[in-house]
Image 1 (spheres, rainbow, N blue to C red):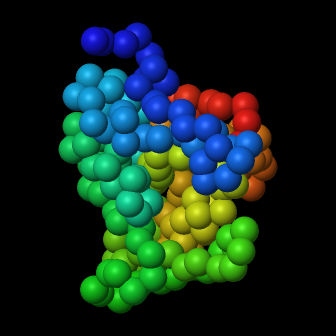
Image 2: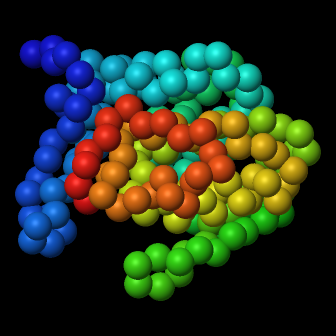
Length: 176
């Protein structure tokens, strides 16, 4: 059955991981060829009129959505990964999580001064990871010209951390 909107493919799971939370499951989009194609096309549409050099994706679902867009637009793809996963010289950025800290890294030679970068990920929640990614890109002399997400949990106020960026999401859920 073909559905009309990307959000029609997203499975909502109540009370996961805890009571009162509605988990928005992206795997149901990935498991349906029409849903996956609609998601990629919808995210790619957000890049119309934007001049950029490279697409960066955040581990791991940013890879899933960012790679086909980079391929379709014939752009290089930059991996932003969890610490310790990249083999060459990296720069890293640590950021706060709800309970602790995390660190992401990018290859030092993946971004050149003046590169215009689009960041792609599946979800914007609190914004901490993508904020750190933006800082990494700036540290290497790049400029983040757009951030595109498939889903946004507006109730977690992730956009508040990203005021300096052009941020768009395909689907926006008001809650958490």
